[in-house]
Image 1 (tube, rainbow, N blue to C red):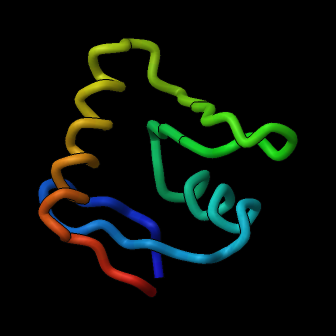
Image 2: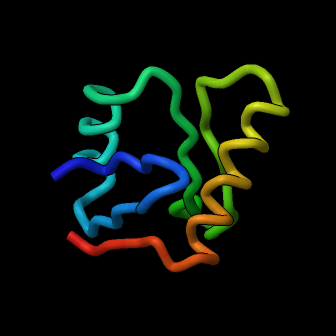
Length: 75
């Protein structure tokens, strides 16, 4: 099972631990955006390999549209 989000199709969710998700992402993705909450203060933070803010926004908006349309699947 992968954690690939093939926009504008379906998004797959997983409850695997963070290290496993990062391992899967490292093996499968060329570019990545990771959103999460910090362990200490629960603030939302982002890590990405994408330099262009416009491209980051495009990916985030694509994810938002997929979520709004309910195209998500559990493992």
